[in-house]
Amino acid sequence: MRLQREALKHKLREQQQQQPPRQTTGLSTSSSSTFHAAPTPPQPQPPTTWTLADFDVGRPLGKGKFGSVYLARERASGYVVALKVLFKGQLRSAKVEHQLRREVEIQSHLRHRNVLRLFGYFHDAERVYLILEYAAGGELYRELQKKAALAAAAHGTGGGSGGSGATSAGGGGLGEARAASCVRQLAEALRHCHSKHVIHRDIKPENLLVGRDGALKIADFGWSVHSRAGEGNNENGNSNGNSNSGDGDNSLHSNSSNNTTSTITTSSSRRKTLCGTLDYLPPEMVAGEAHDRGVDVWSLGVLAFELLYGVPPFEAAGHSETYRRILKVDLRFPDDEVDPSTGHTLRPATVSAEAKDLIRRLLAREPRKRLPLESVLRHPWILGNSSQRR
Ligand code: AMP
Image (cartoon, rainbow, N blue to C red):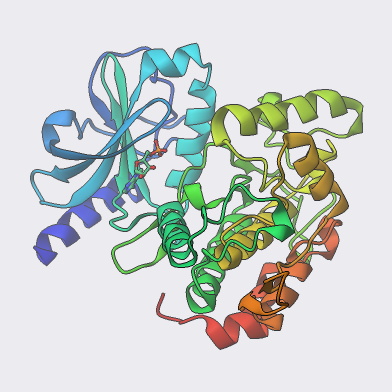
């Protein structure tokens, strides 16, 4: 089995590294069921390799906006992958073919233990198939939800979400060790992405998968961009520049101040329609200012908070109140839950001072002042709590 896996791994690697990749142009045209390795600028076409017939398709793993994800096994090698099946018609109607191309291009070029591998894709008349690394542990979001449900059951409450920010302690966090381990892995993955000038821009628990060994995997690069060469490469890991990819798709970017209105609309509709949460948006995006890779550092801070408390830090009853809290960086750490009639502590807020210190340093209003990822990895909370094996 191990040998078989190695064989497919080798095969997939060869597809991408030894054979010249080909630009993705066929999402909506050809009806052939041809595998393409990672798309890059125009190159000679690789030999036809993969079709659906190469895979045994198993149980569904989940459903997304444009299709479903299935467990699958490559027949020749027995290597298990996740096959994401997207319907071309739906991609076309939603006008996201360009976004998918960019996602495929970006994700297939990243190689990191904490970034979900995209081995390649093929397509037929109606569908596009993405061959993804299988993340046996599912979504980190589910892990959080389970903890929240357990905490709610233990305390006889309705759970950690739906409260009003600092007043809802949640109690559904993952615990300091797991949270620190997640933050460390994510910081490492983001450092890799940023070193390749890729900004993810949509870090949140729903977009983080967990591998068989508990390793975190950043998935879903649908909102990621390539920052322009020379941008965002200062010591701090942040720059003042606009992070537009320069690929002509301005609809996804925050632009500089002369385009503020459309930027805000884009950001908010993005959250409403696709992402379902405003909670991870950084103040510069809410304010319609230029943004850079500092947005990922901000999201790391929001995530650290949510992993520890079970709720995101700026949660509020309505969108405008969430926006207001983000813009003000209205960061309040939940206190002990006290019985008002007796003054007794019912549930202590168990999050350490070091964890709070890291969160404060990540959630700085000014992108340049956010703690660089290198320093996140050396922060005492990470060093003291995170297991290096996960
Ligand atoms: P998506 O369309 O990417 O949102 O995926 C839909 C669901 O399928 C996700 O919520 C996951 O539960 C599951 N899923 C997606 N990709 C993978 C993967 N590579 N490994 C395991 N499960 C996955």
